[in-house]
Amino acid sequence: MINMNLKQLRKMNKFTQEEVADKIGVSRQAVAKWESGETIPDINNCMALAKIYDVSLDNLINYSEEKEKISIPPKGKHIFGSVKVGERGQIVIPKKAREIFNINPGDSLLVLGDEEQGIALAQYDRLMNFIEAVYKAEDCSEE
Image (cartoon, rainbow, N blue to C red; front, side, top):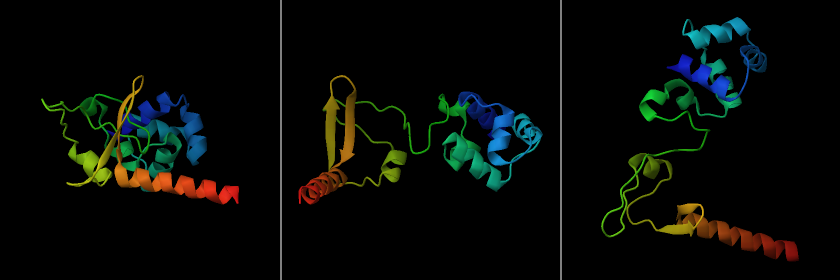
């Protein structure tokens, strides 16, 4: 799996094997062997590769485009799949999204919308804390 991810990420980023090798301090042959599946990079090289490709280490190693049906997302970006809207407008937020964003039963979410870009959900408390920080920063800059 990692060999396919390495090859795909390199091509997506329009790097040659030589450029990848230079960026992490290995030979071009090492990169070629990783991409062919002949060998696998050690953990330090995996961390360096994840950094240059801006993906999580977990996705670099374990991601399966065949299973997910999309290419590896950038670090910190997620696609959780699709949800169906119920008769009364309710949706179920996928478990992985609830875990990553620490969304628990009883939490308040703000529903934001832009007619051209769509709907977004934001955790009410986090958004309000952000807005409060912006107002405080404005007050400080006026003094």
